[in-house]
Image 1 (cartoon, rainbow, N blue to C red):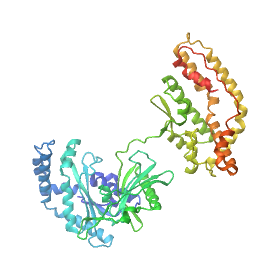
Image 2 (spheres, rainbow, N blue to C red):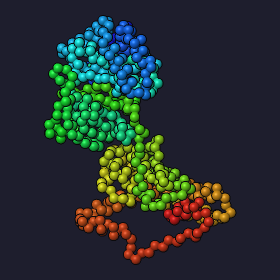
Image 3 (cartoon, rainbow, N blue to C red):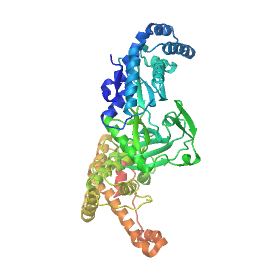
Image 4 (cartoon, rainbow, N blue to C red):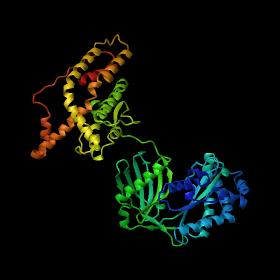
Length: 556
């Protein structure tokens, strides 16, 4: 019979014996992470306690005619079962095992009557991975063997709280096949504590870590008793995106006679960030290691004392929604202000993706996977800004952000000038852009002549005689195949024009100051009196089907 297992004796393979909390702590200890030491009271101890105390049959009798939908009935039966458990003696062998494990823990940390946290962790006989989170009790700052034994029994009794009974009924779990394990862990008298989500549970972004931090023990944050500091960190960039200082109205500390007490915080504490920026990044890195070990986003309880981090527990984030991308209209609203027909949309979405991908590959960047470049909503095309950001992920944030802005919205105003760096991806981008500037002016006239010939060939089709399918295929071929050698260079041309425009402003600024924008606009506005005339294509039947063809023809 195994009633006690230390953290270094357990892992995910012992979840049926020690529950999810205990198994996770053992996993963290096994990979060398800073976990306060402790031990687990196994499910076998709970089972044998029920058997030795003769409680199995009385519990069945209490549950026999329970009305699960009658809350008052469930509550009364819950109280009856908990009363039976709390009045029963713990078998001598189990009591001895708990006492000896606690004594060794006190010796290890060189502290008499070491304060410990006593946490419940339920597990199902046939479904050891089933979740019962938040339904059983946790007790903090428990000191001495008598108090530990008393609170262990209270944990066992908490398996029969009315919320736990109702949950098992709703989920179809048999009451007799669910057991209670207990995690006993040395407490850290934290100066700061809280929660770390290694993926943002608000927006589903796996590249954002979300931290909550407050003064004192982490129970104030876990229980929602305070408004903690909320910090968002961009994992891939190793930088803080946002630090919102919460009011941190109170803190939970040890009580002298055991348990905890709530203490109001000072005005200065409420205004002061609980963590420094370097501490935030240290904690984010620790969270990354834990996520890497488990292979999935984690919800981590942590504590900080005297400059040392402690991991109190870690569990998977079970409510994480799929990450959402940012879709923007920007350039599309200039070109296509009105909703488009389904036929034209079927052409424009793959065309613009092809153009975007050609640009990234020409510059030497890898194409993002498992992410659309263009989205269509309410018959309007949208850029996926996250697709563009992912393509530039090998560049530093200072260089990447202005580039993303320029690509996503080439006709808009951009707050920051393009930065420079000496990284290989950036050098490759510059060299390939220079190559384009030298070669393309020589290639463009021939590409335009060839494309106009292809447009003329399609224009000769008899729309009255050709079938719908023939017309659609002709337009698809014109847009997706014939136009590609010319249209693929559009973003490169826009990039060069944008960079030239930026350089013109840099050249004018020292000499003309506030007049720079005005002069730059005049210099690129063309010759005074110049008149451009565009012929209107002759109206033909099946305008909706040929809308794409006419629009593309008008571009060149």
